Length: 142
Image (cartoon, rainbow, N blue to C red):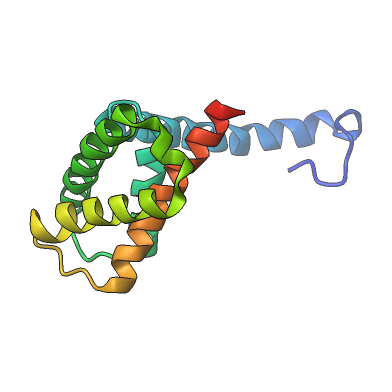
């Protein structure tokens, strides 16, 4: 809108013309924030799982309804959070943590909900989960 112009170089007429566009952008931002807040509430305000959910939906790796993915991720969240809270030192053992999380992913998606997972999809989901927990742990440890 104001590309290559300093704000003081924008005329009043240009500013008036841009107000409508700016309002539309603002409304889109408000709607996106509301949708993000609703999704965050579904995951008990855990931003890790919102990001995992979004990446899964964007990737198209699973041909399932959003609700089914949500339920599987909530199952992983409950088990993984409990696992990490009982033994926080597990975050220092990458291979072990990765192995435990892949078991949770397969259990929740394939065994409990019947998703047709292949090795590639399982690893993709697991990597999303593991990366989010690592990011959170490193942020807390820093």
